Image 1 (cartoon, helix red, strand yellow):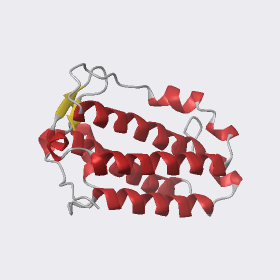
Image 2: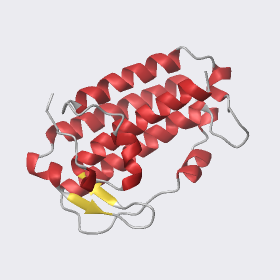
Image 3: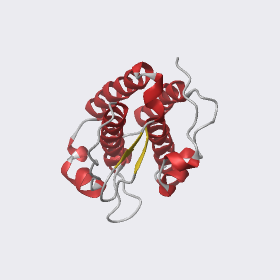
Length: 175
C-alpha cells in the first residue's frame, strides 16, 4: 500500500491532536485503516445485541450509535479530503454529530447491516487515498463553523485516530 507520511501539527486543528497521537508515524496509514477496521469488526461481532444497545450513562450513545457515528464521520472526512484534493475553494461546513447520531436510528439497525456499511465506507476511503495524486496530499482546505480545515493527508490520519479513540473508549466504558 501507498506510504502517506504523518502530517505535522500545522496541518490540522489543535483538537485533532488527540486523534493524531493514536496513529503511528510509519506512513502506513492505509494499512492501519484496514487493520483497525478488522479489529473493530472482531470486537463488535463478539458483542451481544444487549451490549450493542448499552449506554454507560444516561444521554450517552450506544455502541451501535458510536459505530454509525464512525461511518458518518468517515464519509464526511473522506468527502472533505476529496474536496481539498481537487482544490475546492469554498469553505466546507461542519456538522452536528449529536443530531447525526440521533437521526441515524442506529439502535433499530442490525449489527450486520451496520458492519456491511462500515466495510463499504472503509474500503472506499482506502481506495480514495490510495489513488489521490501525491501533490494533493499536502493541500490544505478550509472550513467554517466547527470545521477549521486540514491537509488531505491529515484527514486520513484523523479518520484512523478518531476510530481508535472510539475503540479505546468502548473498551474502557462499555465492556
